[in-house]
Image (tube, rainbow over all chains, first blue to last red; front, side, top):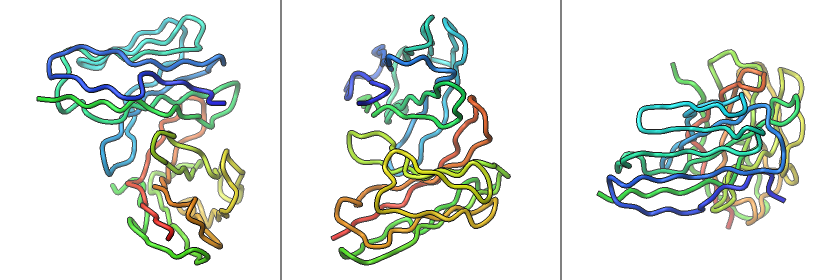
Length: 111
Length: 113
């Protein structure tokens, strides 16, 4: 059973479109992180959210943590080809510092 | 500042051969991890080490062993490689705590024939 479910699994869009990807679980997370991974490289942290209802913005990226701390979303406005990559969410439950990763959303933005 | 360095980057093995993946970090982190990444499966934790001298099993430890040689280095060993271990392996490090950022190496692509 996957602790973190990410959707959609694949997304192919044109430059300038908006998109939202989701990370859902039945567990409550003490923190949740989003990473982006480009081909041939390791994942790189985009954001960490810890408070239910929290919203963080990083340029054209908006991250939201659900009120119950069981889900999160990543919204990208006016996507660019440079946004292409695998987006992974990672959550920590209870007092554990070990993160569990979702399977990721593979995003392709066509020029 | 190199961050997390993994070697080798690519390796081809025959079934039954053994090998060790090396990982070193220069950020003075206590915690280190080994993940494997397979298509459509995300990152699955193989082993982790909370601090020098300690190691624990993750989600998929079978067929692997690890050594936390010192605070900087954490190696992953395949004693008898199997085709099911064909994957991309990532080493990561972090500070402890529920908000610690994981810093990843560039990955080691292993093919077992």
